[in-house]
Length: 310
Image (cartoon, rainbow, N blue to C red; front, side, top):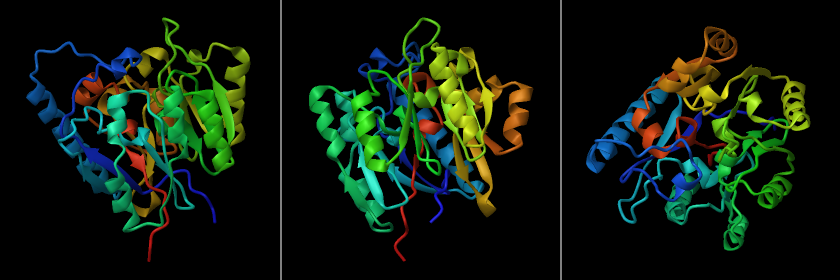
């Protein structure tokens, strides 16, 4: 069975209590709570942005499974489900140890049960034991998976622990390309998916964030060896979420690169030209979600690679 890099099915969680999370803000510099908006206005705007994105994806032929967030307990970041589970072609689902205690509430057995009604599902929760020793790995936020080539790219941080990463890689049989990546102030990026995106034929990478020349060369070499063209982005573009994208499949297996409007506007004509050689670009406004949640389009989509039950 050939392994696909991108899927035509994603799961999204429609937020009930979206807002600024003080626990995650400790190491997520993308979050901003400076606003004159009320809590209810923030929630309403986030839901509208969510609905617009889900609708746009469906209009391009992507199958979108929308799960309603439960109002109790309140979960400000439930809109970012890719951090707590990943799915794979063999039917496996892995659940992940998460840095913020209030984000651990997002792990919902009923979501796994819903998937198991339509797909082959084998859940592995063994990585959760690492939480007791304060070691974390936050799903496809912490990692970028090259599925056909069995490679995991990951920048180390408080939320991406090397030991947990190696345990996950061993389970999958994937090679790990690990590295350190920092912003202009020398602060590690909390998630790999804010500086890197990987599609079938394309990669987006903030090369300048990898200070160590040997690590930088190793990452670039691994990407190029897998036959992908690299779009190099800057740290300033990262701040506009230009690294936080996801390739999905639309109608007639069309490869779509999904991003926010802010990310799209941050890209140069040359960068857009390279992307359009490989993908159709789909973008939408996620201003509220980006400002208060510190995440963007990629974070909102959990990819479903599970085999369907016929």
